[in-house]
Image (cartoon, rainbow, N blue to C red; front, side):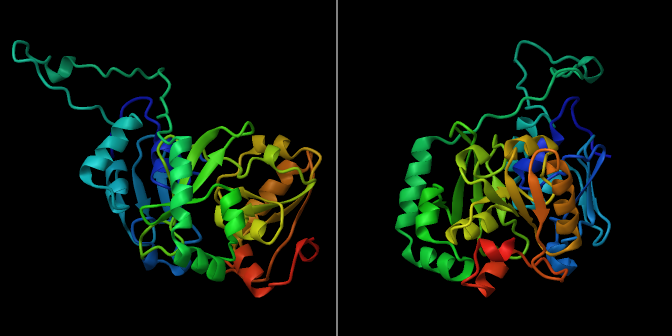
Length: 321
């Protein structure tokens, strides 16, 4: 078993790696295999990997891959130094302390962690500024081939990308995350066409994963609640007032009040996981909003709203209600 320090922020650590931990998970969380997703059907849409939220170890019950929190980071391409940096940041490990030449370190049996069991884990602050967002947004304007491909293959309009503050940095699309007062609270980095084994979405350290855009920024009384930011961008490019849930397992019941008195159409991916999430969200919204679920197609292969919009170029809100 992997040992971690008391009070370690296991959820925050895996979120920083781009792995969504279901909000309701207590001790064991089911996630998609990140070690070798190509070894699974449909990229392991039905999660076969589990993460222990007490000590951070993980095990894929399908392909057999397993390891500790450090191994999770290196499996996703982080260097050994980068993996240790993340573990220290989220309290899973302590930084090495240099011994004073005139003072010996205490024997191991007498050393104590500087973190107590009762001490809450500290989340790292977001090291992204508004200047960074503007710089990356300008950088995207210098990528006409990328913009054209996103428009053709993803259905994203440049005007929508600009409105949402999307940018370009180191081969990824940057997506700023803001709260109800438009303050920057997170940054997502999205690979539209990842290589095998690479995660599509990664959140910067210190990012909060919330509904995007924040419901307070969307004036429409009729909104679409969709699975993932890419579907939201595609829908808004079609003129649909879409709000993204940041992952199929990321919905939080406390978000229901943010959609109070709205008419909410829930559109999740076509697979068992997406249908379960849609039913769960609809149940949480029942007391706050007029919510109903729309199933795009009777299939189980992860067909999503972006796929549907590409196949129905003239469809709009009416066809989704």
